[in-house]
Length: 173
Image (cartoon, rainbow, N blue to C red):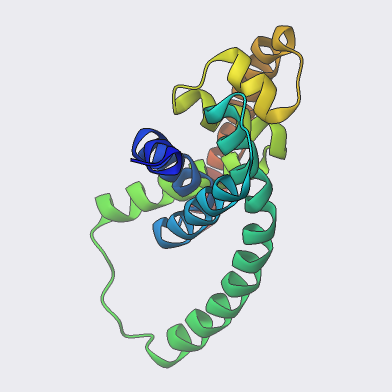
């Protein structure tokens, strides 16, 4: 088994989960993970494998996020056209709608965070240690705890703000 095979077997599942959470698209996450491992094959030496892989993947996300935003805008236009032409479509069950709304609010709240905060939270969720997160995000190891605490607080604030807007919009309806 080659070194890249070992890296892949060891870190692919974690990396794909992280990327899926960041992107909201498992197919795109697989593509970015694959590109990360391609870059690992080209690398002569990697000192901290997991931190290096997550750092490269995070950097690749910036490009992928730009592409995804362009695609999202296109899909939004198509969805609006579809809604206009099919106004009589069935409405989903109320519980499903509520879950979708909450899930969307959570994704928007996560998206509202700065790149570093969002990455730190998702890397921690994937089980990366503070030193690995520090290396992947180019932070000092001592600042990771502060970064995570601040990111959690901002996530809760963003979610509560979105939930508050949802309640105000529901009341206005």
